[in-house]
Length: 90
Image (tube, rainbow, N blue to C red; front, side, top):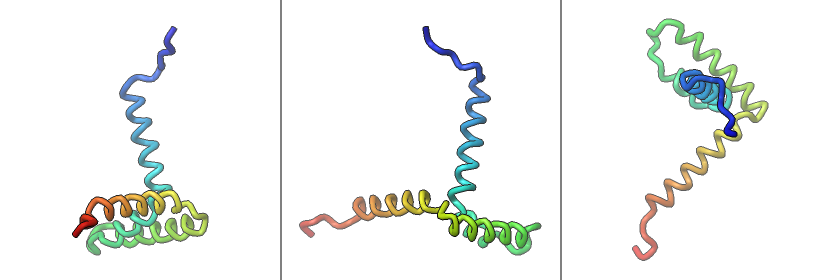
């Protein structure tokens, strides 16, 4: 007998989105900091957002939470270098 989930499809989707968003905030502190640095100075709360992102990035780096993100980005860059490298006979 198949096990049926009691969660509706909308609840499952919401759960997936929330987990992905939380993972992005936890592991992606560097890109979040860069994003806040690029916000216009006229944007309300820009300084507060940038300060919070800077503090979180410092804490995440100290705890080495950024390692998984850094490893994935390094792998992506390595794959891109293979993809766009000149052919060996050239």
